[in-house]
Image 1 (tube, rainbow, N blue to C red):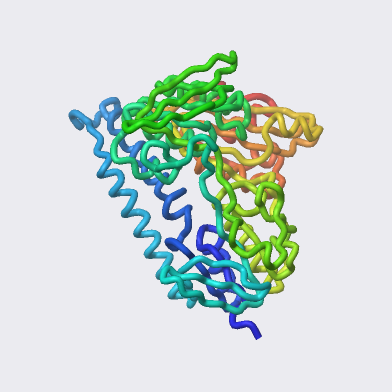
Image 2 (cartoon, rainbow, N blue to C red; image 1 turned 60 degrees about the horizontal axis):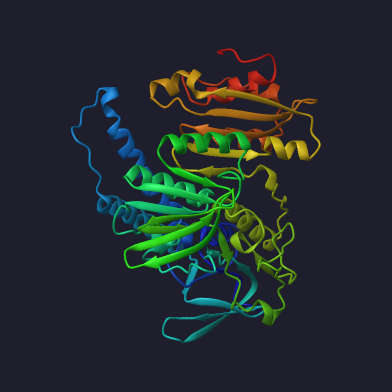
Length: 465
């Protein structure tokens, strides 16, 4: 008889939620973690990044205080203080999670975990000693790592990943960001507010290319207004490091080479799954050509009692996706009925300034799937609460099926939209129609009135435009 019902390798947002849900279901659980409890998300990802982005928001609001009657005198920024806030937040959350593991009687094994058989996990500690744990089931929640460019390996000094960008010793004079996705745009926004000159080089024809095209265009407009230089449709050719920085050579859409000089270069071109050297080949777990682990709707690999969740499977690289997948995996292990995840209605947020969020299909995706698409939009400039807080830029866009009125997607850019998108997620999970959205009374004055007005735009037209 195996000692554990399930051993989870990795304690990030997928692994820790899986462990907590497994305990709720009466399973005996062990978690293996080679670094800090909480994984990338808590220690060098979501939480520290959002902590620093909040510092940027406070700085921006303080500088604008005069227009609200708040006189502060000359405002300065202390990067060391912001980094201290970030570290305090991370430590608080990590200590809380470690305490929760103890409270729930989740056994924590510290060290590098690998499959030593279909029912065994070997854990190699820092001292080199290896412990073998027996288990009925395994969940692989080992996560991912920043992907370097072949010609620009990370030194985390001048050529940095998202990890290094969280601990820069100074505000850059000029930060060049390679990659205009979520990671690149968040760091670009943050350091621009801190006072850096920032340039983004993006190979695709627009930044945040997974967003609706109108949202991408609005963010590019806002970034340009803030002084962030965008080089779109440009391919990075070389990064030449020097003692005090680096030069970045890239080819623009016209085919001409250009060079940018920077004291720091952030490579934000994606992440790679950590599926090497964890025993997959030895036990016969298959991977695809990119290193991801294919799974079924209950997160099982081709080996029935070995599950995989989060960044190691070919699903969106989002913490909340990993958590949802972890819940499904342990519920299946416990013998519960599970409903497969509808990956079409996963919310996604970009915590830059202005904020960006979406859930559901973009206008282009809906058309590709054959829908007769109708779109409703409403600007925050016409919302009383947005005017009151002095943040009137951006809009809400709703994509719907013209024939039956089913809402297909919500796309937002503007104040606090990373919170507002939750209404869209609830609407899509309940297959809401435009009529049901309009039948929902929205409180006044609130920012989410813009959602209601965008719904009106789909039917008889907006009320306040």
